[in-house]
Image (cartoon, rainbow, N blue to C red):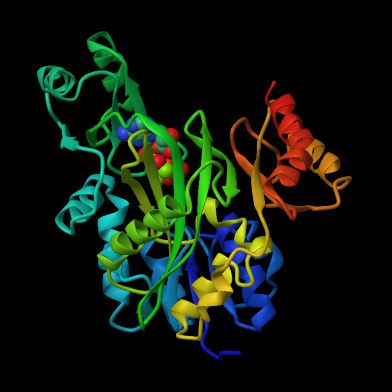
Length: 382
Ligand code: ATP
Ligand code: MG
Ligand code: MG
């Protein structure tokens, strides 16, 4: 399909599913990660780079071996990407990655471009009094967040009252912090956006359910959400991503407030958990779309439509090392369930070990069929 080689910083499950798609196109993907990483397990060629995406020398080597660099994670060294961008195309743009990897800079950027977000305040390095002032101004609870290196809620702390402040600061340690007004949401929505050389396209709006700050379920289409609201979410997601440079897919997480207002929670500059459902439920997956966007291959808009209602269930690690296998063993009995295991070895509590996507002619049928698998995940959680 394309002779250009794609280099990916990171070889986790997102890199693995990107490889699955690339293999179908005969496109070579060079992965920078450890030898046993999930992405490398399914891609046998000698172009991979061993090391960490945090090491400058390894990124240089990846750049030399590739024509286009992309990421499966935003916690990358954007100074390095700026340097290698003289010799290799970097998508999305390193400036985009630099802004998004800092959640507070990301919020400011969105606000500057007229995108609605939860009110936020910088409290990095501030004293106890400043945190109390946030409580006075935002009310309780409010959310404290690490600006950087945050994922799966690791970096968030819910401050329920003034008494929590000392504990919150201790728990988050010396990470750079900002405070966010509590979003009293009715539900969370997400939209995968595709930015191409020609413009911005979107996949359908989905409903996401988080448990303990980790995405657990995705419903496409969202339940009990009007078509108008779903369309508004797509427009907001488009506007948000239109504010950034570069090509590729982006995940946009949103809050739908009780009065119908939509706020952007955060953006991921890469394939995203809330877009896994596209593999089975849409003609083109988020991984197809990412490859095509960064390589300037055509993306017919109808390829991003929902073919059939779908539910995606994350297989999160339970208390035993084989908890994900136990869930998968139940899922192989379910005809409409597609199983994805990531090849991460032993499970650890809360770790994303795999996911299941179930599609059915109606959402009611999908809900009925996936329930025993949700129960299986919950049982493993103990
Ligand atoms: P991810 O793995 O999605 O990158 P993260 O660690 O960056 O997660 P956030 O997306 O900031 O974390 O927050 C995780 C979850 O916490 C949200 O999906 C939402 O359920 C809840 N949350 C975050 N911010 C707020 C807020 N301001 N008000 C209420 N709930 C919030
Ligand atoms: Mg995040
Ligand atoms: Mg999030």
